Image 1 (cartoon, rainbow, N blue to C red):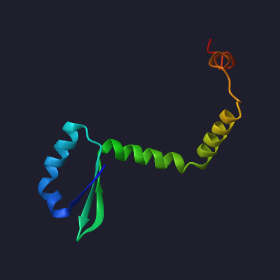
Image 2: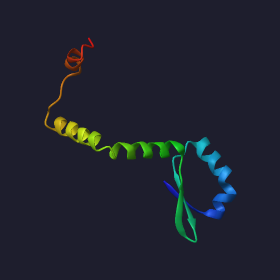
Image 3: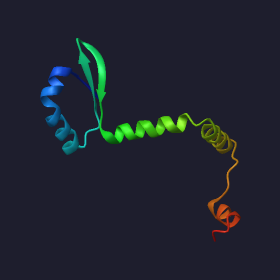
Length: 92
């Protein structure tokens, strides 16, 4: 959920906003506007970390190629049972 607030309102309420998000475990983002135009986004730290991690993953071309191949293999039924994988890896 995105809540829009102007920058002067955020300045006045920043501590209150921080406490409210932490207490209520809310995951909404605040679009901070200046002269009616969005200029900044205020978001919970967990959401920020998740976004950064996602960007790192999707920017890794080799990893994404591997993920796409894995999805394709699953769609084609090219899978192994967990007990067989454990045997192949000498984990049993």
